[in-house]
Length: 151
Image 1 (tube, rainbow, N blue to C red):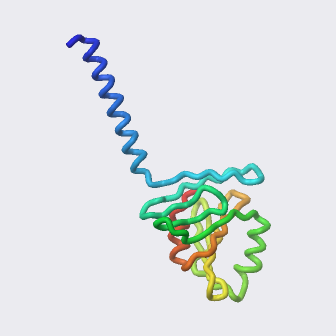
Image 2 (image 1 turned 30 degrees about the vertical axis):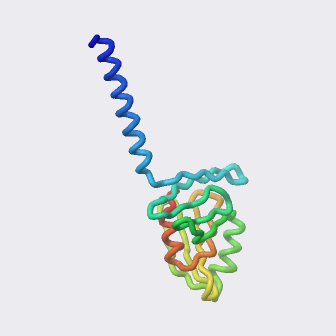
Image 3 (image 1 turned 180 degrees about the vertical axis):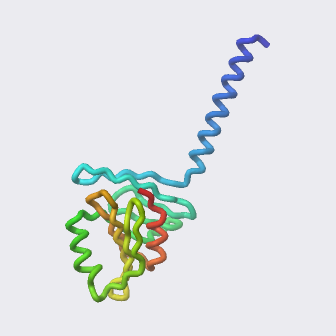
């Protein structure tokens, strides 16, 4: 075998090994990355953990799915809409706040309104927008969806 042939085989093996590593790393990443451009020019980037059959659609209105079944829906709301929800729903006597959580990128409230409907409002910190999630069957479903969101 000529020296040039040996070098070429080594280069091909190295490139093939590199491609296999890249494929394995990307195939094991169970997160979808979604970019939402807002009306004011702001860009909201969400990483969603798709593990265990969960999905988040990439267009508004956003659907959260579990095993291809819609389990909740969401829209972005601006600061004025957030303040309205805060006055009308969050501070209502008909509201039972179930979870109130804050971390470094967002804060969220999961609530039950009028003993029938479950909602969540995810306030994206350092943003003019929040995520209003509705139509979930329980607070557990909402919490599971929210905890899969990384901003």
